[in-house]
Length: 300
Image 1 (cartoon, rainbow, N blue to C red):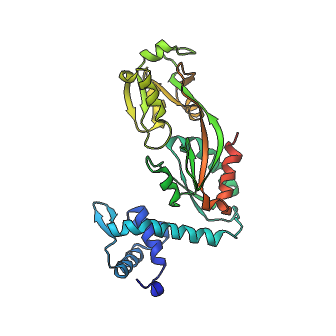
Image 2: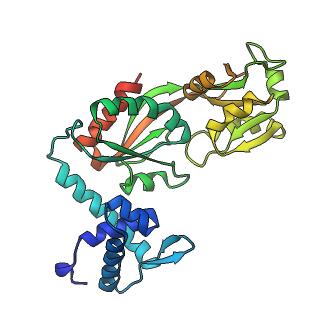
Image 3: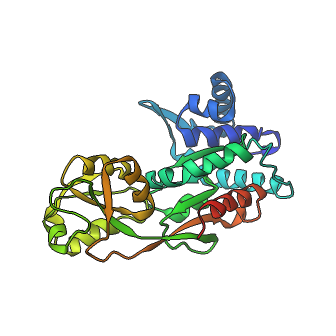
């Protein structure tokens, strides 16, 4: 393919449709009209000789050819953005930049209230977008440049990544405040006899809760498996069930629900909450600024 006459703006449209799986959402992301996005996609289809996307239900699904060129195009676009912005100072007070962050639902509850309060004061034009932690291929998901930061109980990553510790967290037990048999501590016998609610998260890190219960022979006591940590507090507050959550988020949940936090009668290792970024973003001024906000607010 001779790219001398190829409109490179078409690659931005391709990347947006690939990410959003929708013409309308891609148009919103690019601040374009839907007809403009459809027209650009038609031009790229003609240039490549491939359909690129086919409609499946409500989603635009990439063809094998589109899937094959997706990563090289995304990496090239990321490299261009970083190269053009490398020498530019980042002015948070006047910036309109969009930042994307991998966060679990727990992370959203813990980090976003304080972070947004600060950004509203010092960077009112900056916009955030949170994405769910990918359950597999963590390194690949970070490497492709979809996000500026990943924050949480992250796995060990290979070469090409920077990782910075924010704070040390531990797990605690959550029970309802007026539990009929559990007062200011929960014994190992009470813990083993209780019905347990657990979260089987699709992201990283907290699968150790279920594994530990199974190792202690308590799998039969798991009576509820959920997808969301934040709903746990309301479930525990209205039942005699117990649950395990990180202390950082549990302390917030206990302020708004009729639950209390107690030390665990079994051992689950503490863990570091860290922020991670891809090597090529290390010197980007905006990324450095965002990392510093997390460190200022949550670093210990």
